[in-house]
Amino acid sequence: MYAIGLIILLTLLIAWSLWLRTCRYRQMLDENKTKPSPVSLAVQELVATAGGIYLSLIMLVSFLKLEIPSTVGLLTVAIDPLALISLGVAIIQPLFLKLYLLLHK
Image (cartoon, rainbow, N blue to C red):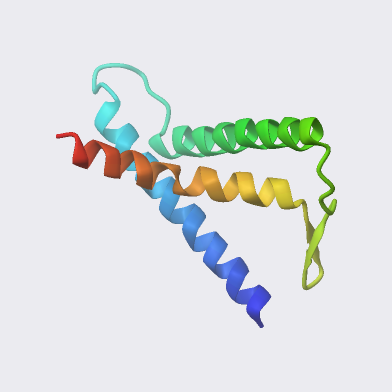
């Protein structure tokens, strides 16, 4: 039961992160140019950020020779723990950016 709740929470957090990124892109895009969809830009940024964090974590784990499990099971789903961590960090990144911008206005 907890796994289903965790999956639902993760889905909601991804949607929230994409919404924050989409709002930021809507503000940045110029009206006169042909432009990609703000949602597609937000998804692209989320995947790129998570991928960069994932690669950094793999290099760190390899450099420090840490022993971590290759997968973590959630019900019938096996997830790479480093991928889950990188996705989580990428999801909360827009919140920290928004807080930073609010504090430095």
